[in-house]
Image (cartoon, rainbow over all chains, first blue to last red; front, side):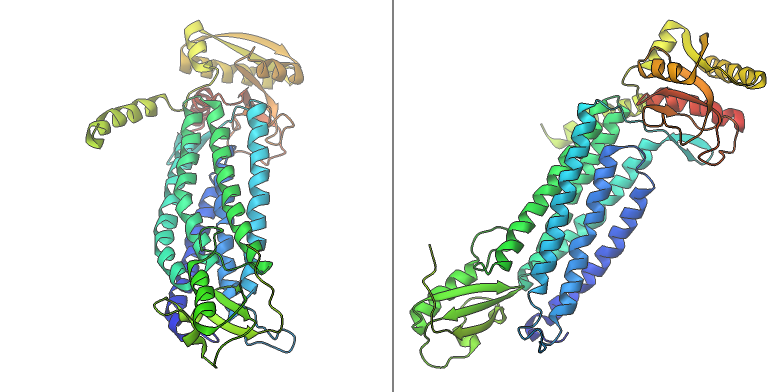
Length: 304
Length: 147
């Protein structure tokens, strides 16, 4: 690991390893589902969600690659913000795909399309393809649940929004798998609408994932105050840092923004010549989060 | 209620559901067996040998369900539209896998195994979309005869 704080090197390595595993397992799911889709709408939606599930892991790996690059003449502030840009792109992809799937499944529901799920040759016998679909969906639930659980503590330690969103998406995958299986079994029971309803639930889930990610990444790109990992609220450590800069170091006005996992501060004045570690509020975890404090001539009061 | 108490009814429900899966939303299999007759459409314009093959195929399907045949001959479009309206249970004709009707009705696999290229017209059946139990039963007849 280059150009990253030494405190988080090991955790970053673990996260990188997990993301490679995610790509591998997710790829096996995507390939397996591709061959089992048939004409089931819920299988199609679940397949798209699993395909999109590759995005955050890919985004994380690309962003981490750039994060380690040294600043250049053309990019003097480095590439920490690449993470936010990649995050925005993948979030937009999620929302667009989710909207398409909502349209697709709603139109099939309105047209009262009866999905046909035919036979699948299985050791010389004709097995109903729906059982193959249910088996693939059941398999698609297992790796994301395990990987998602492993990623959450790492994401918190690294304050990595891409990793956290990835973990949440994977946690949500069990729902997709169950909804898809419900749709297929519903079709099997003769409830033609079950497939489209399940697809609709999955699509709304995709849009929700995308909307959350879009809000957080947009806030970061327009230099919003650092947000919590899972919501659009201001991060606790950012609040404490602002209070501490004002109370302990004589800063009048403070502005905080976030680039990837790092916080950048602008203050109008600062008492003494403290180090970054000293500026980080006592008792707060992750002092490496504070990447820079700049004294600027004019720092306007932050609007409430 | 404790989860353990729920387990047995859930298991029984699942087993019962397994027997019923797949079902037909329009109940074609049940209706055919209850009526004792299968309404079949034979696509006209085929050679005599094909007509005989179509009738043999229909007879095998009917035999598997223990029912008789109420057959009629007509143009492809008219028969497939009647199938869409659930006025027929099965249409037999020479269709390619990539038929323009593919989204509106469900085709069985080729009666003459192995399945040729997707654009090659071969003898196959067509059923109403979503009638999965009915479709599966016809596929089993085709599979049994080919083996």
